[in-house]
Amino acid sequence: MAVPSIPSPTALRREGDGLRIDWSDGVSTFVSWQTLRNNCPCATCNEERAKPPNPFQVLSAAEVAAGAPAPLAMRPVGHYAYQIAWNDRHDSGIYPIETLRKLGES
Ligand SMILES: [Zn+2]
Image (cartoon, rainbow, N blue to C red; front, side):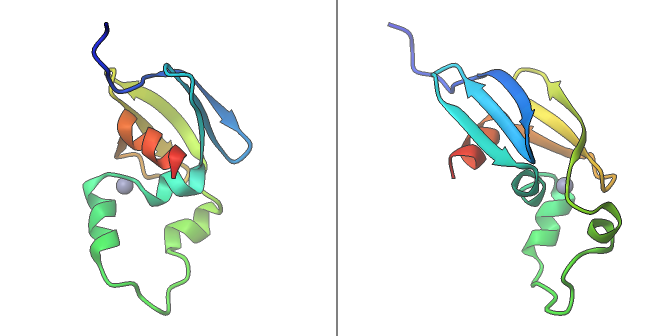
């Protein structure tokens, strides 16, 4: 018997305004670019999310400039994560496989 392990992506593709991932355990998940961008795991975004929200700011300057979040590039980092470069020029987010799976299921 194989030891249960974290499922790995067998296929990733753009679908509408998000990312469709097929997993090695047969599950297929979909996560929107907006959700991915909002959950950017980099230190800068974690700090931003920890701050109290500014009630007068609806969109950040970068969001206004870029419009809806969209990826410019997505590349694998080793076997465990993907780095996404966004159209707001933010590219330090490295998304672990587990995060992609969790966001797709939530
Ligand atoms: Zn970030």
